[in-house]
Image (cartoon, rainbow, N blue to C red):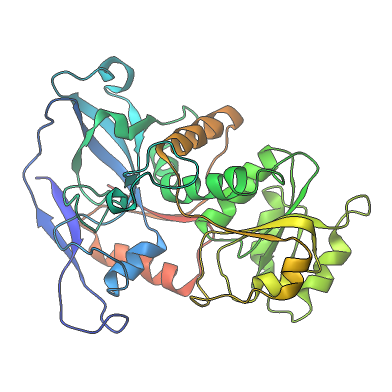
Length: 356
């Protein structure tokens, strides 16, 4: 019997409540015209799933399966499908959002843009289910060198990383340039590292863990510093190459005082590409940044075109996303709770995945 995993409503204030997980038996769906039936093989967690459980995310649905990221096998093509021969009986990755086609500036209509998984208006979409029906244009073939678990680790973090690096910090995403990736260990930060290394960029990282910095070096980072050290910018400055002693860009997911701390490290006109603000909802923007012509660029997810370009880049460069840990079985709710606990505590190095 097919199943789906959702959050169950309980009374409580946003941030104080923590919605429990609930497993449901559901009928097997049928694809309609121009649609594909995908049997989900694996789905991955994101921080948004914690925010959903805390009632800190917009448009929460108690009907929609959780998880925006999934990989599965196309087992049936509906009438009129034009991609049946391309994807039938093959593994694909699902687009983790809807309503953003091509515009590099942002979604064409913000009112129509949304993520999938645990939210409306697409209540049937989400990775935490046995089967899902999607429009045939909302999948990308999984690169042949990847497993389904690795495929599930790609979508949200990957397209966010691709846009933050190649669209928002394009001038720095070139061979021999220097970038700083903060908070290495998270899914987006690791994929920025891997994408940049594939392009020949000199990547430096920050972390609160020496072990995570060591693992980042194994993935190609030039070096790293502990952000728990108050003088970490000075420590990083000593690591930069003599022939190019400044950063070209910072790719950051924390916010806080990153602008203030980065000013001495960035070249004039350098870019700070920010895809998240986990430390606080506001950031300092001092006059020194203005005088140095530093550009602060916000970014989130990406367009459908950027998602396709990202998956193609992964295939061309044989990139393997880092999977921290996976558990088996959508019905193993206690094990999935363990993944949520690990994500909340920041213990992971890479993505956390449920094998379905």
